[in-house]
Length: 488
Image 1 (cartoon, rainbow, N blue to C red):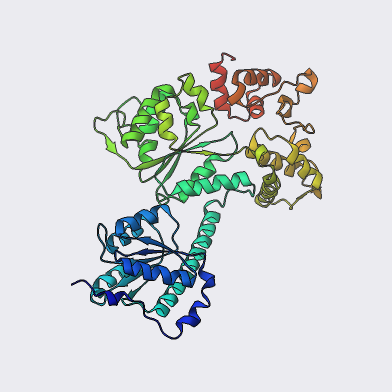
Image 2: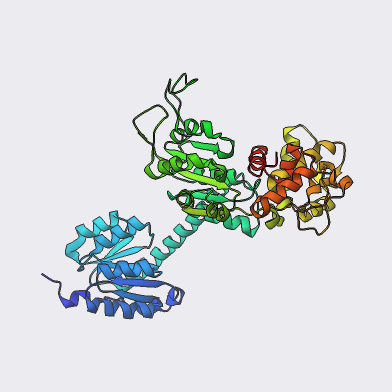
């Protein structure tokens, strides 16, 4: 039988007047009353307002869930027996969505077994009708205090976890912190991540951090340099081969995709992947299946793809040099990694870290930077980004081992710096330009590839190592670009 109307009347003791005098602290909290009985909602609404809370009402479980989905609720007063969706449905929703809102069950005396079930599902406490307002106030206050403490602990755990995951990434700039925050948001999902950034910005470090923070952290992290894979060996290296499938295949071989089973496959410099293999890579990512060279049967594998590129894919897609369907499969979540020139406030931190690390590893006395050296590093453009900075500091540490402090980086490193110059000059990496009189600007490959490579190649007198250094790219990438543009 339905409960009598008088069972819903709020009970109070003589202390109620005194307790409401201290309710101002609760004005910021929003309380959702989910009960199909109108009189209960009216009485609770009135009482909560007197206590300083902001009440919100739901007439059934379905409306309750809708409000929880769209509004910020601090505490939930939940009845079990409601139409459409009951209290169990609401508790199940909270569990599935991972919402940690404190729930106080409001129940009749004859519904205690179901109430205990809700407590096991995560409800904070239960109160029986008719409600004791003083007891309700105490329970609500305790629930909110415990919830706030839980939120504080969770935030501290998140910060500690972030420091552990990004332990190899140094920086305090707003841009790098934003990138870390975005990485934290995506790492626990199953989305494929495309890291976009110039050479030397630390794309693989971020890929490793995302792997370590994911559910696949106990699985393998397989790194593949797509730029170093020749078209002839690509299929065998990526998908594996069986013994005897071709000359030299003396044993079965697991490809990179299969090696990444239950883990993460990192495809570095994905923009340099050969066009002929892109279709097969797309199918492997879509179907999560691969076929070894020489085998008829497919193998199912479970992996996540993180890829990285320095390319401007807009040009690659327009020219059909990269498949747009593969690109969109890889770019489920793009992550932009800023170049060093966009996070100059991080340069002193990075420089001191690299200097201390190198001196310790090579039994050199610890050196310090003079302020003029710091200013010089901050002003320089660093076309090779963090990799170039690290190399310059290591060379400087060797040449300055008999000094008390380092007063210049670029002078010892063999480079030159131009004050207030925001463009990368070819002579920064090729001192020969000072004798030839050429000072052509070399911008990123994304902007003017052919012109940049041609001028750098000439300026460095055909030396591929110095040309690659001037452009901030690897030698393998340079060779392919020289061939592509007919600059051999």
